[in-house]
Length: 465
Image: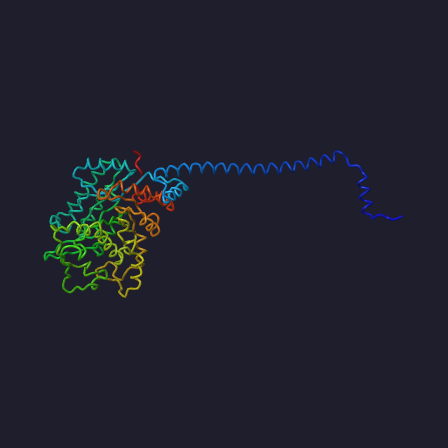
């Protein structure tokens, strides 16, 4: 008889043994439990996906409604649709508070002026304003014969008393700047000490100051002498920042207006006594000037170029350059300086300044009277980023603001208006519109510029009433 394989016999024997019903049901129940667990896991995952999709649907519906509203207001131009879509895709950024740092008052009728300005501030979300006396714009003009060494202390105290009195009418929403006349250093040092005792946080210094000598020569002062250094050291000791305000140039650009003459004194050659000399204008010596004819039809245009259109930036930039290259910031490492109008052109010229300084054959120790005659220790940009704050006063330009944000430390940019010379409405409307047109600028950065950086610089909390 033929033998079957062992494995067949064993399999047949096992199959011949009847399996208990309990064991079979136990195995079947175990399989069902595993299937049920798998289904529950899959259900939970599907439910989570459904909830996520539902949330996205709600968000998309809100975005569509916002987009529809913007398109209704702006029209269906593709550029408008793109801007609206970008705005709808990011969190809404609402800027509801501002501090402005450069705002002038005539103080002829202080209660009315302050009430008018407070109403404008309320209308445009400005909670705090730093006030300065607008009389300085006239009284510090080089041709004003009423300004003398004998009466300058009284003039400064009169301006500062008036500004403080006006600020006190505003219920904690205004503070004053302390005006000084730097040609009188001792009087200015005494004045900033008095202002600090009154709680004034900063000082207003003009971009340059000039005086006419007895032989009809104009003398420019750019504040880097050892005498001026005493003032800068005292400002730093008092922890008072200095706002460098522009000053009209005493001349307009050559060749554009009426006949003008710029004559260098005997013995002075362009590029000789000071490395900052250029175009025949010696920045630290005397200059004889024949001004344009004020009765000319070109006088208004010439005046504009002497002032806000060009001269303002030049007057501040010349002071900044002289302070840096003559070592004032090496001598006064804690000095804080604020400049307006988006940096008075300097911020856009820094790479060229650094390049030319590094490749210059001059030692840039221009004047033996400089406080640090061996030269400055770092490049120009280093000092600019370390010691300067920049405001947007009178220059409401988003492209310029983005450049400054890339250039400066994030705590160094400050919103400002420059009222009444610039419109409060224009300034605030521009700034509030930035999030919808430039979503790449973070809301946090805009809030810092609007008021937070100024709060830190001024140590000024928002009034509760």
